[in-house]
Image (cartoon, rainbow, N blue to C red):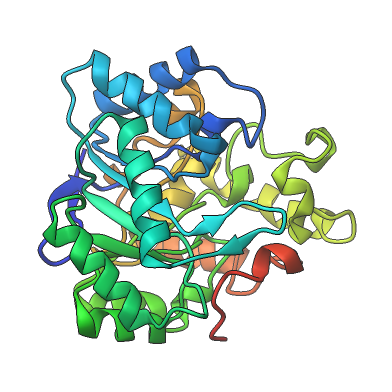
Length: 327
C-alpha cells in the first residue's frame, strides 16, 4: 500500500483509510464478527488509518474498534470525531466541556489513552473558530490527542482556526458526484499543509458493485433522505453511472477502484476514507492507490461525469443545516 503524510507534520498513513461508519448499521444490518473480519482484511491489505466518530452507531463503531485493538497487536492511526449532538432536536456543540467529555467517552470505548486525530465533527456557529482551535490545542498539550481536524467546513473556518493552532486535516464529502471542495477548500488545504480527507469518496455506494439501488433501501435508511436518490433524480443519475461503470470495465478496472483512483489523483495531500462493512467489498477498491491515471483516463471520466453532472443535492435541508456553505 502506498502511503501519504497526514498533514505537514503528521505521520505517514496508508493512501486510503477505512471509514468505519457502517459498522454501526446505518446502511443495513451488520455484526461485530463481520466488522472484525473487515478490519483484519483492511490491515492485511496495508490500511493503517481508521476513521470513526462518537455518534456512529451510538458508540458501537468505537467499541468494535476497541475490541479489535484489544485482541490484536496492531497499532493503526485512529481518528475520531465529536460535535454533533443527537436529539431531538439534533444540534452542534463545540463547547470545550462538551468536546472534552465526548473525547473521554471515545477513549474509553476505544480502550486507548489518546487518539492520533480528533475532529470537530461540525463547526458550531456560536463558537468562534479561534476558540475551537484553542480548545483543541489544550487537548493536544494534555496528550489526549495527537492532532486535530475539522469536518464539513468552509475555507475561511480553516484559515481562522489554523492561524491559532495548526489544523492537521479537514474531512468533507468529496467524490465524482460531490465536487464543492474544488471551489477553494482542497486548494487551501494544500497551501496550508493540511491533509484533505474525503468521506463518501464512493458516493454512498453508487460506484460499488452491485450499485446502490434506492428501491432496495430499507424504510428510513439514511440514503432515503438524499435527494440524488429521489425518484425524480435517480433515473438521470443512473444513466450517467452506468456509462461510468461500462467505461471502468472496458479498462479492466472495478468502477469503485477507478472512482477512488480519481479522488487520489486530485492531490498528494488527499487521503480518502471509503467505508464498507464487508471484507469482500473492500477487495473491490483496495488496488486504487496503485492505479496511475493517464490523460486519456482523465479526459474520459470528465466527459462522462463532468463537474455538476449529478441531479439533486447531496443532503436534504435538515442534513445540510449543520454543514458550512461557501458557494
